[in-house]
Amino acid sequence: MDMRALALDLLLEAERGTEYESRILKDMLEKYDYLDGRDKAFFKRLSDGVTERRLQLDYVLEQFSSVPVRKMKPLIRCILRMGAYQILFMDGVPDSAACNEAVKLAKKRRFGQLSGFVNGVLRSLCAGKDSIRWPDREREPFRFLSVRYSMPEWIVRKWSEEYGESRTEAMLAALLEKRPLTIRLAERLDGKARVSLLEQLKQGGFAPKPHPLFPENGQPSVYTLSSAEGVAGLPGFSEGAFAVQDAASMLPVECSGLRRLAESSEENPAESGERRLFVLDVCAAPGGKACQAAELLGDAGVVLARDLTEGKTAYIRENAERLRLSNLHAQVWDASVPDESLSEKADLVIADLPCSGLGVMGRKADIRYRVSPESLAEVAGLQKKILGTVWNYVKPGGVLIYSTCTVSREENEDTAEWFRQNFPFEPLPPAMSLPAVCREGEKEGCVRLLPGENGTDGFFIACFRRKE
Image (cartoon, rainbow, N blue to C red):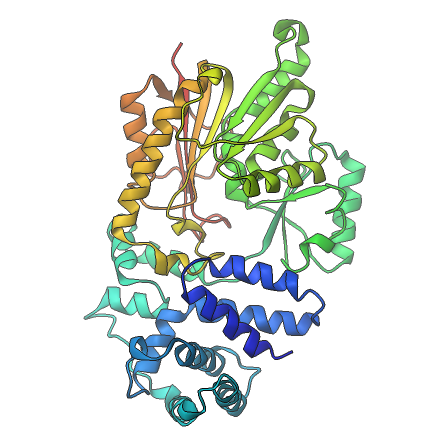
């Protein structure tokens, strides 16, 4: 099978905008699971690379094409982007091969009349790639960073205003770096089982290393792996010995104080009586935080994980079953719709709400091309609508954790402050020790992680306790 043709199919589908490139890639890798590992790696790198470098590739192609990129036919535009990416970023592919294969693709897809155009543009790029004219950093600093890191200029400008140019460039660079896989070892594993699992991973060439945000030999046990390929085939995965979860997304549960509450309940059963702790995750899919909470609780409580569709809740159940969690239940429910039956019932409400996703662009590169300043305001409005509904599920003295995987203030600090001012809650200091950079300049009870600073995705957490 032709990996370039497969990548072209993916890019054309992604360009239609109905599904994220990362989701299309996952589905295609599952469909063509029989492919050789090297072919899969080539296909993934080409598809991901063209997506994350698209803005930069278009800037370069404009210098060698007589036709503006936006006016090209979608198939030709994608073929040229693929060719340009191979020429500029894939040293293992000879320039001649990148050009020849692009021409073949155009002919195979019945665009033979434009094969000469494709050949001419890419041959010109090969000859002139060392003399590409880049924006002047001094005169156009935002434009320079936008092209260099393939990020829309409005995002670069916004981040520069909020975090400064130096910090912004570090974030942009981090989003283009290869991401290690992060795993959280199951709470039920004893010391011997953990040592055995880590040794198996080491022998398999995955080089597990303790994550810097979490103490080695502590709880939770969090490790990064050198490769993210073939997760389902990793030692211990099917047995539920670990969960795949970014370190940042583990923090809401750890910051909530649930670990301490569960331990206290187990140590003093007489005080808790027959009542079991109750945790509600209102937007739970794919279930990482809900599963983490259920593991912490064990026999001390139950978790109700809700999301909008049956497909999402089925994914939560699948993860819970693999991790052997009998105290987690998944249910279809729209978080913006009130449920009076849960009024003041929850010890903890996890509100990891819909957001722009700007903090996870390292994993979902095409987010950068889908968001706009207007969409940030829209999603912030949705967050407020959901928070205005789910706050009442928290019992007096209970905890609400608000979190997002973005780094924009209107979705994070501004929404958290709106919540504090309008509902009977007070800021709650995070229940775990964190590096100072995570809370630098932030309001009480808030945690902010920026890409590249803590080995995590960009993330935001606000901790609140309901007043008695």
